[in-house]
Image (cartoon, rainbow, N blue to C red):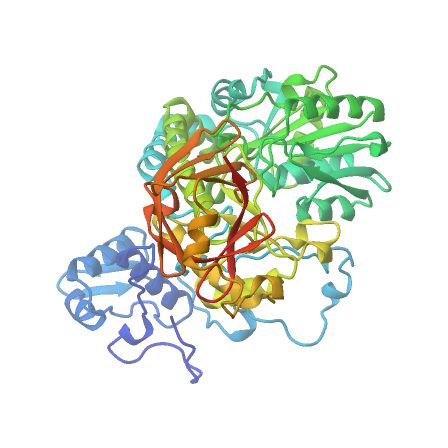
Length: 619
């Protein structure tokens, strides 16, 4: 980093600039690019004045500890761009024409404002000042276990493919095409690619004039709130739902009602009442991950018809429905033109490319296009053309197949780890794919505190209370995502998180057993657990039956159709019951004390905590 000198003349009088240049070897930028930007900063800040001789490539490379070729290449780029110039046999010099300005604390971007309130600040609207939502640490990628939804590890981004389409989009003829268009029209090649490659998967037929490209998801939501929300408009949202969307509606004076979500999606009942707008995320409910059933989608359309309301279908998670066959979009079921459909080119591309799209009746698209033209105008035409090539060359299909495999592996790894380490104290909903689990912890768990303790130990989780209409009643819920963590780290991360939960929770007396009086003896274990069925539910709500045979073998069947099966063996060591599956529980040996309460068996660890339980059934 460049430091601010205390003397009034900032120009460098010594022969070395190395002390003012700091290079980060862990940066995503190459050393050569970093060196160029540092030298330019020194020029712009007034440290390197016009016609000053630069250090030789050999001298600067030695002082910075980098290769001479790196310095030579940086100098050459700066010469080509007119920032430096070369004199035969004299060296390299700073080019004239760059006016230096010493950067001071008063004009550094991001520095705190003075204590005194500015005139502009005094005119700010009051709304939005207390808006609360989860804020991910900017250096999340440096944490060992980042279970954060919507952040993507670098291995997922299709770098070679995006480089190819970016080069194609920057071809001379391509630039001529996308650079001469007006600020309103979107790239026709991209619009046609969206129709062919994306909308067809969702059963949607739309003309070019029924599609608008947006700067990511937030612009689409903002355009809708500006077009349709007004003072006292009644808006129905899911509970839990997106806090930023609730804030957008509230800023326009709308009355937001959050309605509960169950295992089938947004609950539609007789109290749905009159409303003007309904926002739903049917493919993957945001944030719980529940998929809305087909029956519930039809019921929603009927309720909207009665209320004469428009439906905002938020389908930004549609590409991640990989465990079951995808259901048709609500837009494709609509026959009255009351649904507005929002989605993205790709969630993995979205953080950097920021391209989404809206599908709606042409009158709505025309109004949205005019409103967009008043603010951001169209999204980057260069990015639009690159995205068009990304779709038409089949890179999107390749990416989707890869993501399906990666996310399915990660999500199942997370499910199995939660089922292994927290079977008694948490619950997760059954989902049809996606990239996260909505975790219900013990009632006494304070997730805000859990998140702080976990972060200090290298684990990032997302508290969920801000998604609810009543945050205080849902302080035991959090979200774990897999987009940012490789599968090989998931088990260890869940194990460590489990230990933190155990430490933080106040264990009830019925769950802690420090003495051995209530533990079954080896003889009692053998008598009780021979030729029996153990019945319980997994953390994701599916039934499981384990048959313990007299010969020491055991058979497990999980799922409503017993589709998940495994075999293993069980035995007794001292007063501990031991078991080992071939595949379940990572195929590892586990040993527990055993206690009984009526017809329920509890497995107890060495710390005296119940770790699992089952109903005892005889053959």
